[in-house]
Length: 380
Image 1 (spheres, one colour):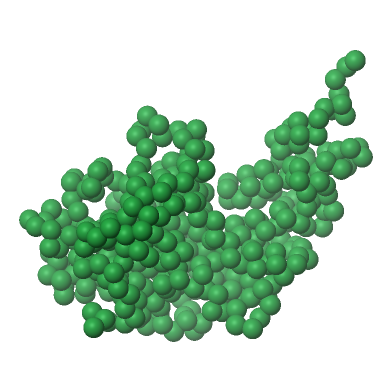
Image 2 (image 1 turned 60 degrees about the horizontal axis):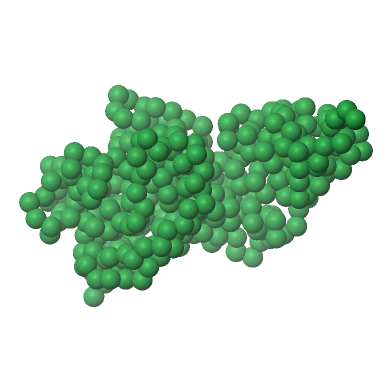
């Protein structure tokens, strides 16, 4: 008996359909009743892989604009589209589907930082999602700060505490703010180093600090190290830095016992991949290491950074709004490091980074930070 596609198991047919591009899959889904049923099945869902392929590549097929009108495409796929697609595509090109409020809430939480839920107020999730998406797209392409007069940021101090501070959004410049911090800490003679912690659909989290070879441990900021390199997680060796290793990282969960900056033993923490919000493909395995060159948190080895240096003084954390030109290389310095992250086109707009956002992207720091302070001061 000859083998035809009609005689194959539905799981195998689904795997074959997943290899098609969206335009071909649309055509194939109408070729027979069986293919139509397989394409429409929520559990098999052969649309997910080609849709994710489009989202990860950043350039979308034309047929994706009106994919929501296709009855063969399960609505669940649009949660991922809304969570990861470019704002301009969602606002100007795509025909958005009718979805339940629970699906709009899920899309909101997968796309935006927790601190941004303040904009929801008493709105429905659908309206809140669209309004915030418009606001983010507007701010990424203009210098307007009317929606947020004050921008919040967090500083991890060398004594184990942390401050949530704010500055005027109109003149917000994290590099200038950090230079003032260095001057107050007698570190103005040292170079500022900037690290990309994690990137999302609309923002990326930056950490500004100072690397040095201190004579003693007094100026060393152990919390900075713990934030950038979660205790117990190490970058795999170059020999193991493969796609197979990336797959293993995606399901890896580590349980460790953290040590605070004061050396006291704190509760263990089980690491899991961040899913709300969803990191960009360059940081898909966050907080674990993501191969591919976009994850720049591990530039040293052991307990030190590059050239055997350590983080000293305070570490400033801020959220930078991303746009089409944000990830384009700028200048002669290293890509996605230091000044390349804050100097150039598409790098001048910032959003608030709050306690809720810190707890979301670095939940292990809850037991490591000894004191949380709103505003300046020591919290006495």
